[in-house]
Length: 111
Image 1 (tube, rainbow, N blue to C red):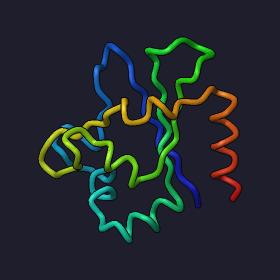
Image 2: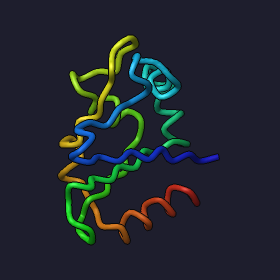
Image 3: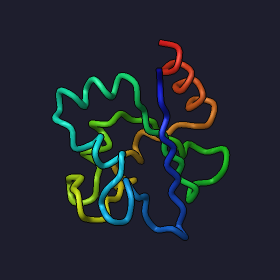
């Protein structure tokens, strides 16, 4: 099985939450696993980001694994009991176009 978790950043929202507002949920629990377990999970899970502040047709998508997401959390860590957010600037230099993103998603799903 393969799983994609989609995240979308818009100027109106101002943040991209991880888990729920209370600092819980399956996303938080998954990201708090030890690194060796997270590496196994990353074989089946990818995160896809859309930055809607960038123009349509431009490079505004990123794909990353669980370890990369964990290290890109605001404050440098995911924790229970607090609102966890993703720092989108951690991936801004890796943005690709829609066509490139589709290629990456297909590659992940079929390999």
